[in-house]
Length: 194
Image 1 (tube, rainbow, N blue to C red):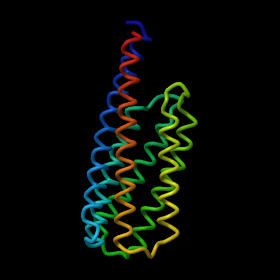
Image 2 (image 1 turned 135 degrees about the horizontal axis):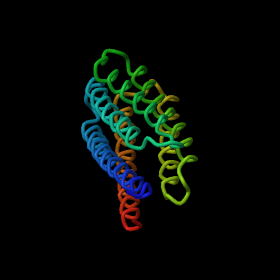
Image 3 (image 1 turned 45 degrees about the vertical axis):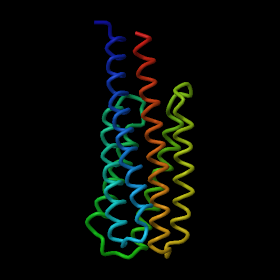
Image 4 (image 1 turned 120 degrees about the horizontal axis):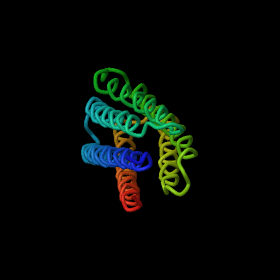
């Protein structure tokens, strides 16, 4: 078998896994964001658990995506690190609901800023012609803006935190789904080229 064809098949398989993980992660984040916005007056425990579930699932999706996209010269290690961090933050939010709003806000703000830094670096690593750079940069900008807002006003009410978390989850969900469709487009283009 021609090694180039094998690599194309491996690349298509990786793109397929990334597409599915991105779309499913996006749907979960979108659903969690809508749920948080629909019930903003719920207790911080509910907000923490909903945000924790979303972070944990997105972290697992990033971990799976990192292993699927593992290739020399790729940024899979950063994606893996970000996935582990989001999974850890998610588990803290789910199982440690006793802390004050400030601790939860701090975890969310830190995750937003760490994720933004990783996205900016990752954007410089993807080929320009892939069309994915703008998605990485846009997600990074959204994360920085929301991260700064969350960290500057840590004493915000549960209602404000819920609204910010809901907006963030909806935006990230939509961007993840867009990225998933972009992975599918790249997968189809690669299939046509072989």
